[in-house]
Length: 575
View 1 (cartoon, helix red, strand yellow):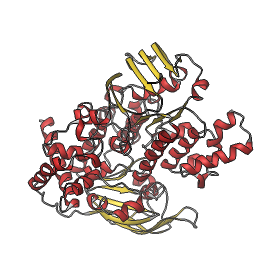
View 2 (cartoon, helix red, strand yellow):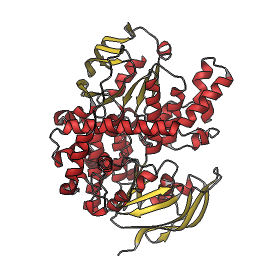
View 3 (cartoon, helix red, strand yellow):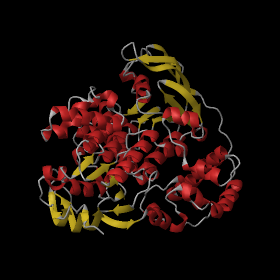
View 4 (cartoon, one colour):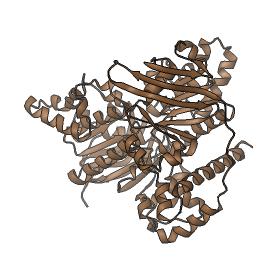
């Protein structure tokens, strides 16, 4: 085997601001051409490991290093970060923090400009890589003005334009719709196969990454490497559940059916599972699931009545939108990047005004209601946490809304501490927000809205960048709020979230509402999936391959059963 292109030997790293090391005794070898997924719960050290590879540690993030990290056979502990950038390209989780150009084209060309590449050579290289990632139609746009998924593509193009040997992706799927995320994984796989580049992916969305084969999974927890093995070995071991990583839902279904997986069953891909072995257990379990009673119809809370919106009176962003959200519902708004989902939330909050049509809350028109008055009933958590944060300390940020409303200090402290515990932030309650990861900042903004106890909660990608444990804590907390009557409306690219937690999926494509239905039926309609850039669930493929006569009903029964199991777990843990 070739010499490793990345090698950690007895490596530890201790941030100056931390009481304990973030990485401890890391021994790891990565060989040329490997494609590796790095998994772990928030705070496990996986992002710090990436920083140690690309040089942000110790040049940007200061701290104490022991042991060595070698890049291409040369010890690189103190290597100049520019030298590392010629070997390692990084796509950061927070795309906004990576932009330097005034336009998309300038941003992609930045590395070439630094290397004094002639203008005549630069233009075709930028155009080629922009076309590769489907951002060529926005070369003259400002990076900050394109959608979240498009920003990710700009950042990816900026890395690909420079011919580096190692590509490091930090949460590359965090802001992408399912189909675009699938395309990104296909693109990464294509790069690995055709260019033989070494690929490192730090990502929570395990099933999406496994859309294409990877060589190894590295599982981290509390700064240590817990497992380093093939995907089939790791998935069959069950170790992911022990460390709070969400397994693919088709594996959860097999576990419910009592089927014991082995690495030889190829659990990393639903298409490679041994159908003859799993058919009987899956069919027997499906027949044994009881169907829950349907809930009574609830009162209307929010209504869109023939709403149309355009930013410039020429290009229509939302076109004749009609739907009603009922009190106590938990619903999802889904669709491709740039379809108009975030704009719909802005209309609800009053940040924008409909060009025509009417929005009503409890039957009363919101068209002339101010943003401030709406905020008493409607809480909005934006997609980018950096756009919401205004205080230095976590406790101050979460309690700001209560303070502005004149709530007594003792009540503020009680409610802030309660929501910090639910959102997994209590250990960091006295930290500055600048010391948090992107995912942790996201939890701060969710906590700052949840503490206000609104009637309608709008969340734009609430679980992006969250590990499964914090994802589950946040979603179960939202379920508890829903039981008390809170209505929740979420914009999400997470098909697992939509299936597991929401009752309805409002599907937006090209500014139009193309489907309003239960999630299991939405993700079983290929025409809707293709038009809205969604992704068919592995549960449906499992049902089809095992001969379930009504695959859609199988998906819905799995979701109902899974909810019952989570409710049993919740009651057990709260007793």
